[in-house]
Each structure stands twice: as structure tokens, then as C-alpha cells.
Length: 413
Image 1 (cartoon, rainbow, N blue to C red):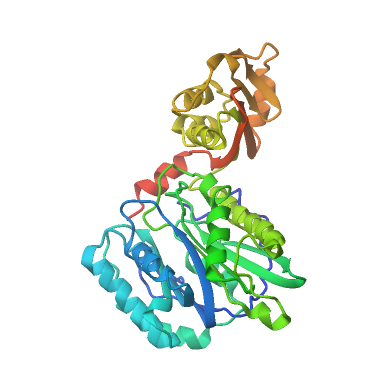
Image 2 (image 1 turned 30 degrees about the vertical axis):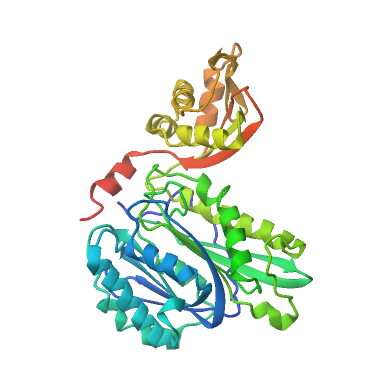
């Protein structure tokens, strides 16, 4: 790969404000990459509430197992993330590496190993030498600073071509709180929660149980609605931390996710999760185009989403987009194979504002020139009307280019 930044990258990055209660540091431990940071440490000086969603893969990484186990405690003091090695499919060595890392972090930060959360991303099946960052964590704890979000996002990248950051603010009971998030992901991205690594921190005072509900509900239309290549990672981790620092401003602690005080916070959190998820798709390996697939008129919302993912994950649809070919026959194919109810003679398809098919055949006013013009855009909307019910969903994907094959053909070399 040439190392060039995705043409779909944001034109400018969000100015990331500090979030009270969390400090960060990065280091170059040489796990796989040379001359770049590859370890991130997040420190919560006061215990933070924590929520998480993880891969549904039946072959999860050792750090995912570790996080699931600690999530029950609901408290976080430290997060250690490394890039370059997924510590997945590494057997007993993998478990030993997580234990050594957690031990090093707990000693550096001064907390129990049950308050440490770990995430790894990179090559699967390579043992992770945890001694490489055991040595750097105590220095990182001392150096950690609150104004370090952009650097933190850089340290967790693998094949990403740009760091992914997002920030929002909301009011809870008249008190303003901040939410910051970072994500990494470019390949092996298919939503089955989570879809990559993402860490979101707020200074709001919210109990872990309420935080978990907010996060679990927020992933459905965001991270679980994006796909780059239909492959679900072994390491998918999305975590949300609440430091509680806003309590000092008089924010009353929220213990129930249904509390009306969370209305604005929930909307803003979902908006931030969607922003990060779309940044991941826009950095899909080799991507040149972003595609939003909307399915309407399905039997249910769940059916609409399955049909949408069938279209978005189709290599033939994605290569047609890459070639700027308005080949709507491939969309028909993907609807038909989805396993959901569809009626060929009620189907209608749009590329952008151009209706290309209606009532099971090509639109009588079909214009190849108009459809092709849509396909030349950087952002393409495909809409399908099933004509059977009121189910609706939107999923997001990117095109499939020669670069994707090149990146993944020599990923380990």
C-alpha cells in the first residue's frame, strides 16, 4: 500500500477537548510496527463506570475474554490497548499475556487487575510478547495527560489511513457534560458488535447499569449497521466510560437508563457513535466510495436490515460501485438471496434520485446516463422498496477495489 490517506477521509479533524477524569499516554513498544506508537494507556484517577459490547465471534481474542470477565465489576481505572498483534488464537500464551499486562497496569496505576481493561488489534495467531509493554506502563502513567485524544487515536491504528476521533457535548439536568470517542478499523469490519476497537469517555455521572443499556441500544443503528467486507473480527471491542467528574458541577447521578434526564445525552451519544462508525467505513481498506443502502417496505425492521446487509456485503454490488457501473441487477440478486421475504413484482430500486427499476422490471423512463452520473459520485445512496410491509433500515458500506486485495494479500509481510 502506498500509505496514502483514504480519499474519503474527513477534510479536518474534530478539536478534541480534555474530558475530566481521564488521562492518556502512548508509547512505541515495537510490537509489530517500527517508528510509531503502538500502545495506548488510559488512566482514570478516580474509579470510572464502565460498559462494553464485544464481538459475537465464537473465536474471541484473549483480551475480549478478559474484558467480559471484568465488566461485571462495573469499575475501570485503566485501559491498555496495543496495535500490531490481536492476541487472538494464541491459546494459553494469550491468557498469560493478558494476565501479565493487567498485572503491569495494576501496579503502574495502583488498582486491582479487575479494574483494568485490555484490547488488542492486528495479526491473529501470533503470540504477543507482553513484556514489551510491561516496562513502559509505569512511565506512561506518570506522563499521561488529559489533552491527548488525537495521539491516542493514532496509537491504535493498523491498516487505518487516518485516526478516528469525535466529540460532542450534552446537558444532563442543566449541567453540561462532554463525550469524546476514538475508533480504529479499516478491514475485517462486519457488524456483529462490536466491529473494531472504540473507546468513548464522558465526564457524566452515570451508573454502570444505565451506561450499559445506553451503549447496547446505541450500537444497533451505528456500529452494527456498517460493513466493509462482511468479516467479523475476533477482537471487536467498544467500551464506554463515565468518569463522574460532572458531579462536582452538581450533576445528579443517573442510575436508570430510562431517566428522562438522559434524553439529550442518549441522542448525542448515538450521534457520536454513528460518526465514528461512518469514519471506519470511510477508511475501508482501498475504499474510494461510501455507500448508504436503505431498505424500505420489508416485513420488519430486522428483515430490512438483513436485506440491506445482503446488498452491502455483496462483492458484486461493491465491485460494480467501484467500477461506477449502475448494474442494478446485482441489487436484485442480493435482495433475492437474503433469505427474507421479497416479491419480485413489487420491487423498486433507486440509485441516488434515479429510479432504475419498478414493479419488477426496468423503469420505463430509465436513463443510463442519469444512473451513471450518480455512480460517479463519492457518496452513493442505494434505496430499495420491497413493497411488503413497513420495515426500514439503513446500512453503510464502501466499494471493493483492487487495493483491498493488495492490502490483504500481503497483510502479514
